[in-house]
Image 1 (cartoon, rainbow, N blue to C red):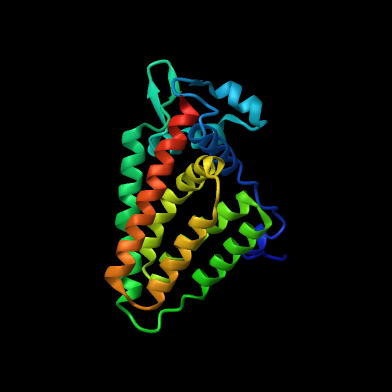
Image 2: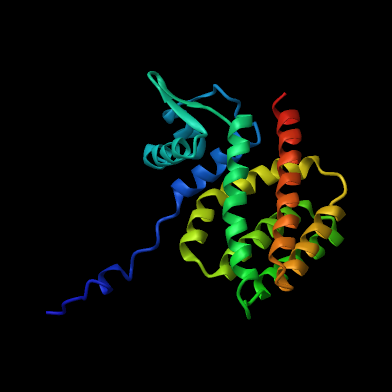
Length: 227
């Protein structure tokens, strides 16, 4: 009799689709962009029919959204909480703390590999020249994520990874409002130049202005979106 190893017993099984992740991503974006207004009742049965999935992935997504503070549980079910101005302030405060730590570590060490950051800046330039706002926003977020990778602190990267999807959707809001993307591109060029030069104080000053500018645009864009 042939006995399979435990690894072989799974060889014929196709990987299950990440249904919960898909539902979570779609709901998160709809909430952050305001397509799902604050106070909307999220009924599991209706969401299950809309996404054509069982209630399991729906419950998983709603639990994660509650952790992220985007929905809240009440006596009669789950409701959209949305993003308040206080939420936006707090998210950017967290981002500043995390990213300051990452770029400070890079500036204070010699020989840090910045090729990943440079590659994302090239993607930003290409997207800018092509007039592709979606690709520009994607490369923008990847540019900042590459700093965490370069810093070499996996736990710091893991914390950022928790908030990255939220910032990706927030960028979708600001990106729709921005006119000329050239100043944003130039900000990233200056930031990389300063990091590569090892100028810690100069880098933190540039990064602080960049994050504050992003916060200001988010306040403006989100206010217009939800007004």
